[in-house]
Length: 181
Length: 234
Ligand SMILES: Nc1ncnc2c1ncn2[C@@H]1O[C@H](COP(=O)(O)OP(=O)(O)OP(=O)(O)O)[C@@H](O)[C@H]1O
Ligand SMILES: [Mg+2]
Image (cartoon, rainbow over all chains, first blue to last red; front, top):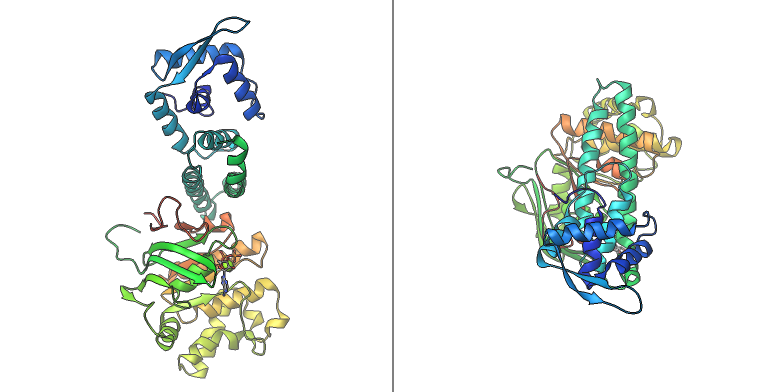
């Protein structure tokens, strides 16, 4: 049910995994940690928290009130943590422009004190499997040139993803220090 | 490799250090007959070291290496040289041809070393050069050929004994993508045609995608979760 690409659901669960937070804090955390993503509208944060609460993935942990309005603080439940763990480990369908999703998974994995390497290795394998299929297709002597060109295009993009994953593996320690986990 | 196949090459938790450098930290591998496997990973991750251990060039410090069910890491230098000469073909990034010999003589060399007759060896060498599209280079010395031609000659030399296993370390490393893929295609075609197993070190993902399976190394390990696990899955 929550298996789509970069989903607000999992981002919020990931941010709640380290400690309970209220909606405003979640929005701020999201926007600073994922500057390449579009800023999260408040409305979407509250709507998503509502759905997560309904499904038992988060619960209300208390309310806070300073000078301003009352704020509801949310905490992740065991079910929520489980759903997050599954999503973080789940390999993405190899396709162009996955950068955002992969990066989000890696940052959230480190933030929640997991190792990002098993995910990266599994994702590498999925990409290489796809590249093998495309390579076999274009190596077929009877393949029409149009198919060969399409396969070349997809292969070069998958290769770019793979190289990004390799670079990222070498940067995991620095990234871990930066996310403060 | 399917479960019922007996692996042709098998390594179990091999470790290898060069003084202070731990190059392999418990790598396990199983490669089936006729399989084409790529060993990949960043520079310094242990790819060449693993290839050399599998090919009986280096002896691991611990763990086992088996070829056709037989331990080869316990063999002495002479026995391993004989094994390599009879069963393995080995191909390096920069050809490794003898500079004083013409291409055809370079290709004939492994046959001559295995005590085949000169005429027969030269004929076989010429027909391999022809198959690899470099017949016109037969009389040229390595210094007189382009990188692409050199590598084709080196492929011919590695295949001329019809080895059961061909070990190649960055065989296309000195070539651009197009001629690299051409040489690789020839190598794969020849290997598949004669049922040779091919173990190929490469840092190029597009080359690795020609193989049936991958052993991805990082810091001398084939997988991060555990020290010992097959890098190749069915
Ligand atoms: N003969 C040797 N003496 C000392 N150290 C060595 C020797 N051979 C390899 N090493 C070291 O062992 C490690 C693994 O080396 P190896 O050559 O297997 O890596 P590689 O993955 O093949 O790298 P590359 O992609 O650069 O060829 C490196 O740290 C290397 O410096
Ligand atoms: Mg090497």
